[in-house]
Length: 79
Image (cartoon, rainbow, N blue to C red; front, side, top):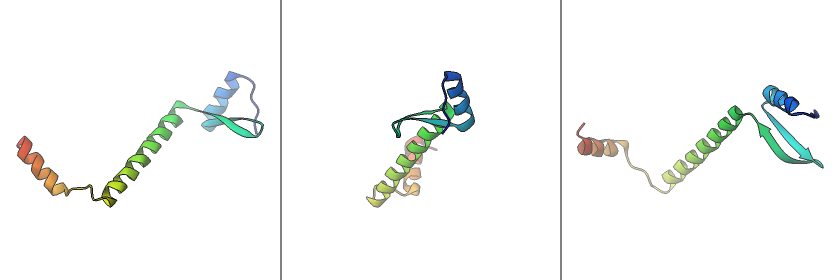
């Protein structure tokens, strides 16, 4: 495990490796990551949650045929 002692070293490490886990007494206490990696992580989590909800909707029959929805939209908005 690499040991760093300054903010500059932390920034350099994160730029090279993407994230850093800071631990104390063999326990991972803090994770530091770049904004880009954080955004990707959040996007991945949101995407997975939306997919899980979609699968639940399908299982519980909370779906409609696309042709029905398009027909209603055409009638409502006249296109």
